[in-house]
Amino acid sequence: MKRSKLLVLIPTFFTLCFGAATAFAQNGPDLIFRKSVDFKLLTPNDKLATYAIDDPIIEGVACYYTAHEKGGVAGMFGVAEQSSEVSLACRQYAPIKFKEKFTQGDTTFSERRSLLFKRMHIIRGCDAKRNVLVYMVYSDRLVDGSPESSTSTVAIQPWAGQNEVPKCGEFLNR
Image (cartoon, rainbow, N blue to C red):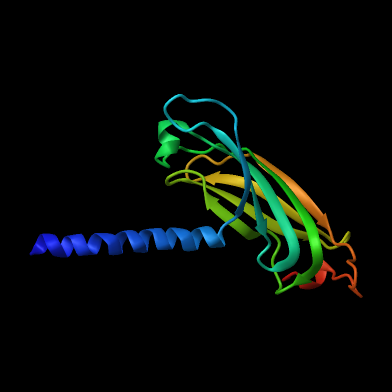
């Protein structure tokens, strides 16, 4: 009797787990492409992967980042600590519209880079004097931080049909 109840619960458990993973993937970055950078005979190769994310509070800006994804046995099981080296490029692709005010150094995107202790962050700032959005990517670790970083800028430009160019300084919380 108990065994049949357990068998009924197993599909429900998998549905909940994979449903949550799918929902998370839809809110995460968009994979543009992956490229293998080495060959491993019986386990997954190391790869470079390029992703795109939209700024959640500034419409018309997307950031692209390339990160190393370790293969091997640890990578196959999702327990490999990924490297801190990440490149970043952000661009204006449509008229810029600010949805709300922000603070210098607000997190735009964050993701886990190891099982427990390491995260990658993309943060945003504003150079009000030049009307430029500034994005920085870095990794942190609970015990031993990482100085690896990359910076990208987006000069706010007029767009077809846009009467006024918004000033990022007007949307800064001071």
